[in-house]
Amino acid sequence: MDHLQDIHSYGLNVKNREIFLHNFLGSNDEANPGVEFRMASIFLKNIKILEHISRDPITIYMNSVGGEWSDGMLIYDAIQLCKCYVTTIVYAQAESMSSIILQAADERVLSPNSYFMPHYGSTDAGGEYLSVQNWVKFEKHICDVMFNIYAERCYKGKFFKDKYGGTKETIPKVTTWLRSKLKNGDWYINAKEAIHYGFADKILS
Image (cartoon, rainbow, N blue to C red; front, side):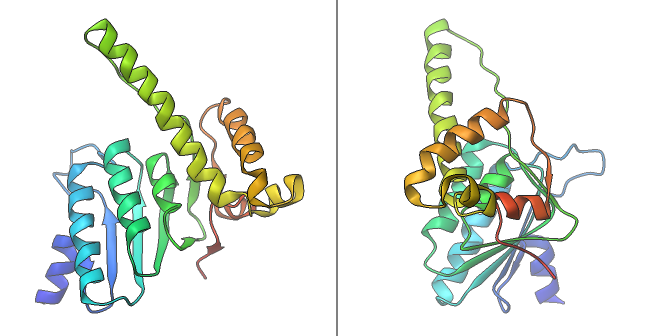
């Protein structure tokens, strides 16, 4: 029972080297906050614990509606810098920030009825004029990082292989295509389509 309690309380199964990446569980009437500081800080501790124990593979089970950029990039970097082979399995959805987090894994797996949704995201800036301008400039940088992350993983997808050749030299073309596509707004695709475009590697069977 202690083992089961640890899984529910901390999202960590040390024995099976599994991390359950989901939102903070609050009251029933609390809106889903998506990726935020509590999720990110708990995840960082969990992945470091498993990495310290051994270099055996780690499996992450993710269910997230997306959320804050900075907290999401904490999770992304933690996965990228992990010395263990990491497989991330998505349930329900990989949208917004969680679609970016997925790209950090060595193997990206989607459950059969999950969906994938990238977009430009949203912003809210207020305060002193020059400070707002500085934030807008930084948000342009964030967009560049986001599209680079997508393009560096999905250029090998069948769609981009057929369209551009599927080599690293075609990444700028893939980036341009994605920028144009997302100008139409939120882009919802199913698991099979996500694999076709190279955002994921396989469907869980």
